[in-house]
Image 1 (cartoon, rainbow over the protein chains, first blue to last red):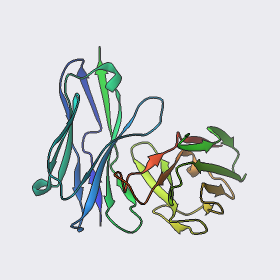
Image 2: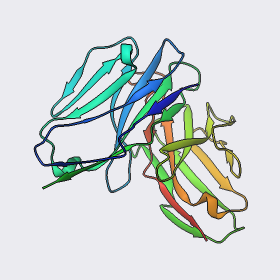
Image 3: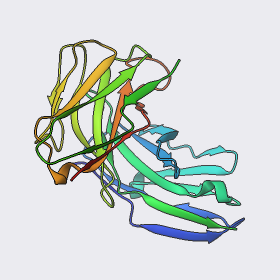
Image 4: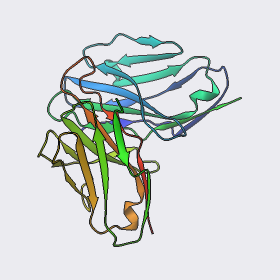
Length: 115
Length: 115
């Protein structure tokens, strides 16, 4: 069965600190997708990144970076020099790579960035 | 291009009442999904549709029905609302081609309270 674990329920950091959000997944599929979404206080879900299982390159987008390691089944998300606007709940999700592409979500990590 | 929209944004029901949530997308996507979000549990799939006229059960389908009479619309119905259905409901859609294949795009959510 597929499963996504976000063990960090809530993290608080002071502005400008770096912070890493952990995501560990379980799947028997050899091909799959991993995602991160941001849910700001306004409530919508904002797509951040998609990674397929064959692409283990790390990705950087501005202050955001993602580290995908198949050996440890992890897809961690780092925010560098955090800002108050980064305060949100962040969800990691796993999808099969065929058929219905249903998502399995983690329970989310609430990030609070304090000024 | 509005993306995915949901109607209504908020609703309060009494136990036993019925209602329908409407999801509409203007991206010509084949796949549509309904999720519910509860505190500490992430998002869980209720029902989904792989095309016009088709529906299927997700992880937590009990107490809900869906219909996909038109490709752009996906309706979620509660026939007899219960307090356990108090939640935030998200609709999502996904295309079947393009660079972000498998990525779901979410609507803004509907906050439902059942008294």
